[in-house]
Image: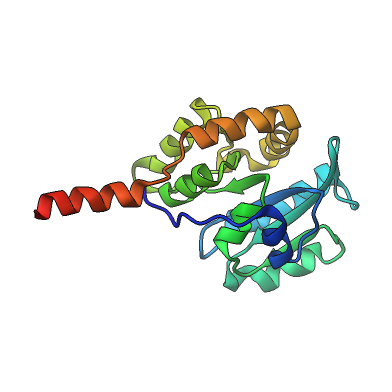
Length: 201
C-alpha cells in the first residue's frame, strides 16, 4: 500500500516532538481519531509495568500517545504525574514513526504499511468491529512474519503489558525491526503510477 515515503533523522524527529534522545520511545496510535479502547486501557497498563519513573528492565522509557483530539482532555489528567508520558491530540505521523522504537496500534492497512516503511515493531490491538474481522487477519500476518505481536481487545488488561515488555527487549526488538523492514512498501506509489501510465499508453 502506498504511504508517505518520508523519514526524518531520529534526533530531529525527537526534537520536533519534544522528546528526549536516549529512552526507548513507545508510540501509541489509534488512528487519526484515536481509539477509545486504547485510551482507556493503555495509560494504566504502562503505569503498572514501567512505574512512576518510566523504566523497563532494559532502561528508561518515554511514551508519545496520540489520543485523538476529542479524547486528549480525558487522557491528559490521568498521566499528568508521569513526566515520561506525553499525550497529544494529534501528531505528525512522519516525525512520530521516525522517533519511535516500538508502537501500540490498531491494525488497519495504512497503519501497518507505515510501520513497515519505518521498520517499527508493533503490538497490535485489532478493532473487533472491523468488517469481516479484517484487522485481526492483518495483524496475524504481521505477527506470523515476526514483525509484531497481536493482543485482542478483550485481552488488553491481561496480555498487553507482557507483550510490550517482551517486545522491548533489545534482541527481540531488533529481530522484529528486521522483519518489519522486509515487509516495507517502499516504492509502492511509484509502482502504481508506472502501472497506470503503462495502461493509459
